[in-house]
Amino acid sequence: MSAPVEPRADAESHEKPRPRAILRLLAQKARNAWRALTSMGTALVLLFLLALGAIPGALLPQRNLNAGKVDDYLKAHPVIGPWLDRLQAFNVFSSFWFTAIYVLLFVSLVGCLTPRMIEHARSLRSTPVAAPRNLARLPKHASHQIQAGAAELNALANAITDRLRGWRTAIRHDDGADAAASEVVEVAAEKGYLREFGNIVFHFSLLGLLAAVAVGKLFGYEGNVIVIADSGPGFCSASPAAFDSFRAGNTVDGTSLHPLCIRVDDFVAHYLPSGQATSFAANIAYQSGNDLAANTWRPYRLEVNHPLRLGGDRVYLQGHGYAPTFSVTFPDGQIRTSTVQWRPDNPQTLLSSGVARIDPPAGSYPSPAERRQHQIAIQGLLAPTEQLDGTLLSSRFPALNAPAVAVDIYRGDTGLDTGRPQSLFTLDPRLIEQGRLTKEKRVNLRAGQAVRIDQGPAAGTVIRFVGAVPFVNLQVSHDPGQTWVLVFAITMMGGLLVSLLVRRRRVWVRLTPDAGGAPGTVNVELGGLARTDNSGWGDEFERLTERLLDGLGEAGRAETPPASQRSSQVDVT
Figure 1 (cartoon, rainbow, N blue to C red):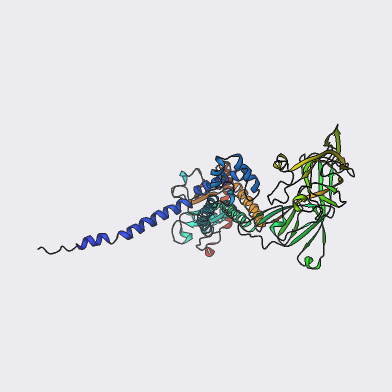
Figure 2: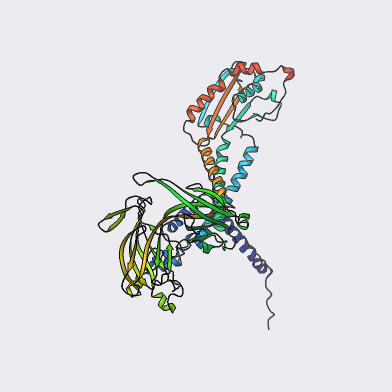
């Protein structure tokens, strides 16, 4: 029986490094992925994808803004709607794919810009680069001879640097020997550092803009509410339920809203004879902070683009319309009054449509079921300034000059007790189709006029059109990143302008004594390079050459110190 074969030592040595090789491979893949992610090309692609991904948010209804419209869209498009919902097309700006693009763009910009910023800081601390060996190979080149001695090279170089004001300059010698003994002196000059600085400022401002927008979306909120003017009930922003619509940031739960109460004392609008509005303003009173405990109201004139700012919140005047007031006198003599906003259908004349639902007073009927059978609904049109074509009502002017209504009066179950959401401006047509609502009258009424129902279960009921009052649409907005968005937008535009207007230029001047020519002759060789934007560089280089060479020999002799005072040096400006 043979002895067991021992594993070879070299086989073990080949097996052990395998985990290290896998780790090296993974590290290489991660490094390559990071380099690809942090390239400017990737950042541009992600920025394009971000703009492309925002398009569905503008074209499709969003659930956080209007859930009802999303439901209507899903009903109208039963095939494509559910697929869009799975792709979070109705919650675009909080979807996983939009957030992923946003985060990747943020990381890409940080990884791309940080090395550029470090490199630019190093270039600011360093001196201009030395001249290439052969200046004649540069795009722009010129040569000249001047009358000067070899001992005057330093003075000539100093004269050249004096004429290069606004340039960063450096004087170099051909070796580390004494400056007075050097045979070649070079002047290197560069300008346009602000171009790269402006470019970096632009991209970092874009990064800050994205961060500020993200902060606003996370910690901000926005609510809209309609408030009846002429000392109506007003509203208090104690919770999201106080608003007609409310959009909260991802971290906002509605429990820490800034407490604010507003009432609208009156609303003033001015119009041209054509009906075009020239100005809107609402005189409001508000309470905030300690005013709530002291019950102190502060006046404020709220105008378009002049919001009320309180505790980080801004209250904007968004729009206005009219709310008709109806009073219903029931057969037992009790009166109920309703003032509710109607929707302006014509922005030119403010012809509005809507519905008023009025419930009988408690105890008017023996049972809740019978009481529901005697609810009153008034649906129709409101004209701020009446214009009749026969019995057809329209409005000829948006001001509240001669209010009138054309309404249908219904009796029955208005659906107030069902608990189901209903449109504020139209009756549920199913209630009419099912016979739960019965039309009793169709009538035109001016302010102060009334109509009496003489037949049926509602006989003896009187409906009066009292008049109309303005309402305003207020928006309460809280965006902690708004100020920073403005700051970064301004710096982004400033950086862009600087990067477009400033041009990067490099110039070298080489001073060499003419060894083969007449004594006291110096060869001056110039070379120029436009690092960006070659347009106009030819004329600019020619003008620069003329300025540097004009009277250079005389300037060098005037600046040459006595031999006893000369010393070797390298000047960096």
